[in-house]
Structures are given as structure tokens and as C-alpha cells.
Image (tube, rainbow, N blue to C red; front, side, top):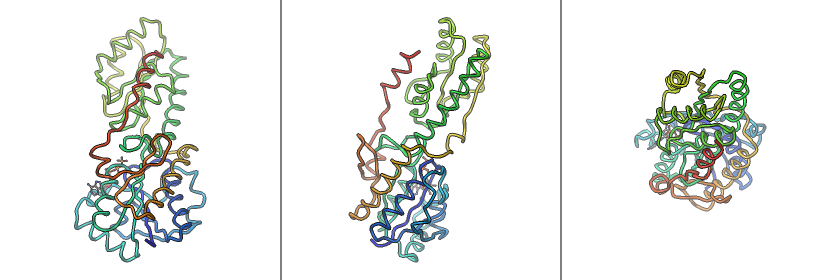
Length: 319
Ligand code: ATP
């Protein structure tokens, strides 16, 4: 291979810029030309492609978001649309791609590989919800942001003897919620991996009050319940002032932490090395502190993300 492309796809995550930078610098270091594909698969289809030089990625390692832009482009599932996109790869002479995104983006990468354009996937999402890796780029930054917000809520909850219910992102993965609950010393946590009902949670909160707790912080992963209605119910049952806070997209932004920058740099570099070894249709992961790679389809279909029972138990014993 002589020319590679790099794109970011799906939801953005802090550290994606560091990964792009690593792909560019590792590629150039190995004598490759590197092309930036803007706005994910949509930009690949629209021929929004520009050659990147060493200085194209200067001063991006410390910035959140992705300077290449990201997009959702469901049309890419159609083979005819992918064929049109491939014409653009051919026009630029791009032989292979690095795709930074989630499991949907991995599927696009796998399909392109089948069509003769080897791709390597890098896990980029704050949700930590991708199999084949214990860590996804952006998770640590988001966790830092959430814990900072929780610390602030603790101050005001304590002053007003209030119950605060906080909705935390993660889609259907509780890692961010559980991590924030343990690091933020939150009293209760609801994650999709474990059984949940509003009623059971309200009973636990009531038990906390009986135990003498004057204020409480409750971590709830998104998509589990409506936390505004939950706050009303808690207030009705307990008679304590209860507030709901949805942290929302603030969790997706901000300067990446050193951990995210380092892992993104390792993964970007590793992806280019895999392409140079002739690999394609693989996704990169971090397991036991080592870089690993798996077949994308095997990873998506057969690998399970580990859930930390240890942290789950801690969230109870620290109560
Ligand atoms: P996130 O976890 O942040 O949502 P994601 O990569 O899973 O990231 P998706 O929207 O599922 O996000 O996928 C990103 C893009 O990948 C889609 O908009 C589409 O362009 C492409 N894609 C998804 N699934 C497929 C598929 N089965 N075949 C080809 N392309 C796909």
C-alpha cells in the first residue's frame, strides 16, 4: 500500500484528533501518503477528501471533537452507494483506510474490506460499548467530565439536603455511569447490565433516609427511565426535595485526558502498522494493557464486553 485514508464516523469522542494525528504521523513515517476523509462515510461518498501533511495535524492532540468531522450516513449500508464511494478512493489512489468510530462504523469498514479496500477499525466512543477492547477512546475524558459535574452537584445537594438524580451517557453500556458512581461516591447506581425498577430504587433511597443520610446522589444510565418523572416520584414518596440533572452532550466535549491521548496515539500507530502488514477487516483493541486486533465480524458477533462486577459490588459496599 502507498496511500491510506483516515476518517471518523458515528458519535465523536475526545481523543479522536489524537488518533487521526497518530495515523497521519505513523503513515508519513513509513513513507505513505495519508488522506483525510471529512465527515465520515458521507464525506467519502461526497468526495470530501484532502491530502494531509505532517503539519495538518499540528496542535490537534489537545483538542476534543474531530477536526475531520463525523456524520451518520445510513445510505452506506447500500452496496451501490459504497461502489460510488469507492470511485472516489480510486480517483485519489487510496488503497486502504483507518476508520475511527463505533461498531456501526466497523461494519462499514468490514464491507469496504470485502470490496477490496482493507480497513482497520479503531474504537472511538465515550460509551466504552465496543467489544474486543476493554477501553474506547474518549471514555476517560468523559468520566473526568462527569465526575467533575457530580462533585459540583454534591456541594449544592449537601447544602440544601437534596437528592440529586443524574443521567449519564453510555447508550446501553453502564461503564461510564458505574465509573462515575464509584469515583463520585454516589449513593445509588442504575445500569442496563443489571435489573432495574423505579420502585426498587425508591425503596433504596428511602432506606438511605432511614439510615440518616441527609442528601444523596443517584447515577442513572441514559435510556433506563425518565429521570424527571423519577425525581417527582422520589419527592412524593420521601418528602425530600429531589432534582433531576441530565448531563447531556457536555459529556462528549473537552480536551482529552492524557490517558485518552496516549491510547489514541497507540491505537492510531498500531492500525497503520497492521495495514502495512497486509491486514484488513480488523479492529484494534486494548486488552491487559496490550494492543490486540480481531476480525471485525467475529468481534461484533461473538465477543462480549466485560462488565465490572467488582465496581458494581463496590457501589453497594461503599453505601
Ligand atoms: P456510535 O457508537 O458513536 O454511535 P457508530 O459507529 O456505532 O458510533 P453508527 O451511526 O451506527 O455509529 O455508524 C456510523 C456509520 O457507519 C453509519 O452512519 C453508516 O454510514 C456506517 N454503517 C453503519 N452500519 C453499517 C453497515 N451495516 N454497513 C455499512 N456501513 C454501515
